[in-house]
Image (cartoon, rainbow, N blue to C red; front, side):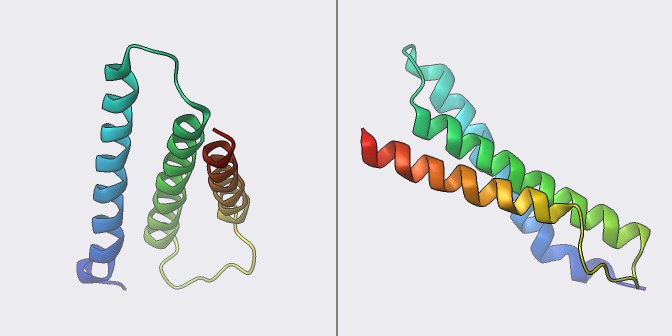
Length: 94
């Protein structure tokens, strides 16, 4: 059985991601102009990163001693890397 101290790094990571998403939302709403593609892709990638963390916390709580050779979050990680790459490409193009 895992203690609460094992979840502290993940909890800090989730808090930081929520803060980043709130700041991105305020940035996009406060502009009053058209959203840039780099902002959209970066927001999507941070949301995907948050969902990956939620998946691992839920999996860890439900199956604390089990290991999965291939998990559903692998698809999320691929989406994260692709959206971050698209964000970089969009910022280089502008």
